[in-house]
Length: 294
Image 1: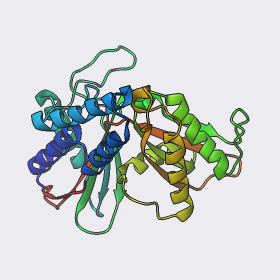
Image 2: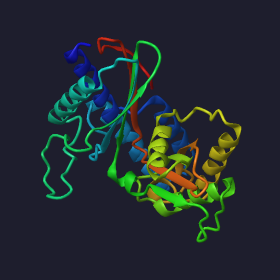
Image 3: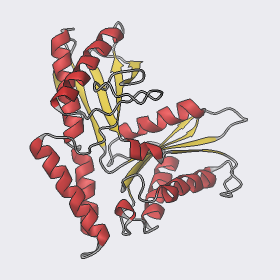
Image 4: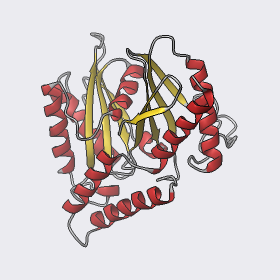
């Protein structure tokens, strides 16, 4: 793999993710904008979001000043050099920060110092998985701190919600997370949800659900129905864009499952803000872009 080629491909991936919302997200936002009543605060908020999206793309500048946690999800063939990829990606992140595609957002938790590089322990975050075929599947999420703050994890049964260890209980947990978020997560939001797993794998898998397109349908008919019920019930809450009231509280809900232990039943909810910064690309063995995925 050519290191410089890979670095440039990843730099472009960072730029696109920071400045350009995927088409599936932009289309849902426009569709929901038209549903909001005229001369309402909710409609105004959606119009501001629309203009924000347009300006960021025109100027190739970050959609949000909080360019967020940098999460790479990489699926690559056997023999793939993970360390070489990390080095190239770190360089791409450093260059993207210098150019301004990424804001200087990574801070030492003990000293509070900001090195201004977006590099350090846990930044960026890398998840690697082996796959068949020669091409390398690289997907990137930039997840802001505001939406990360309103993520939630529940252990069932939950007496406070009257939620048992069943899908009805799961649904209560998801809707409670939406209700608790209100406008704090820069809504309208998108939910990635995991039923099962442990505390760590549940949250990771819930973020992986955010790699799905908004217009896809869950292959599991039970989960498909759950996703649709959550969407309807959440948007009937009236919380609306930024918590100002309206018909658009959620843009999407994606649910996955992991096996659990008999003693544990977790529901993990990752909340993504309307600035749904997610892009991906297929790279050849030299690190050259072959196809964009969103």
